[in-house]
Length: 159
Image (cartoon, rainbow, N blue to C red; front, side, top):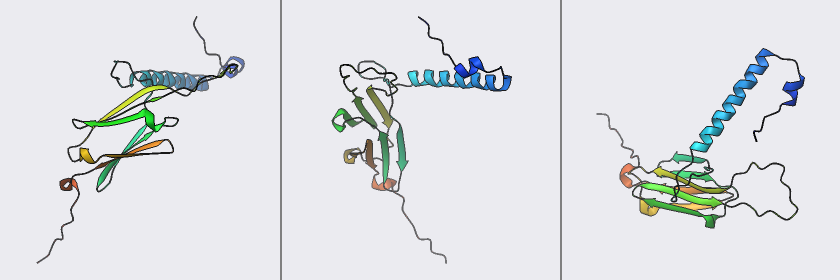
């Protein structure tokens, strides 16, 4: 069975080429975004594709790199962080609440399932000193830099 999108406003209102063509472009953009979202999943150990990828921020400070991962609804016991051969890997699973008898979902937009994110670390990271904390659904991974990579201030003397 093929589903057809119905837009009551478009079907009732008179045709307006400027508005209707813009609406068409927006629909195309949504479809392209949906396709990219499907294909950008990471490969898991069992060659399955990740259904969702949690958003990540990576920032650099003077002494450390920080990776912040949004994991709303994920229990910290369901997250595994590894550093191996210069690659930081964050794996986990967001499990769906079991439906209660009599519940009828009209719309479900939240994503559930396994995820995996991997990042190649710069050689300036001390892999054995990596630390992680989890607070309010945000995982923060601290990656300290080796001493040689930290900026040094040198005073220049003028003669």
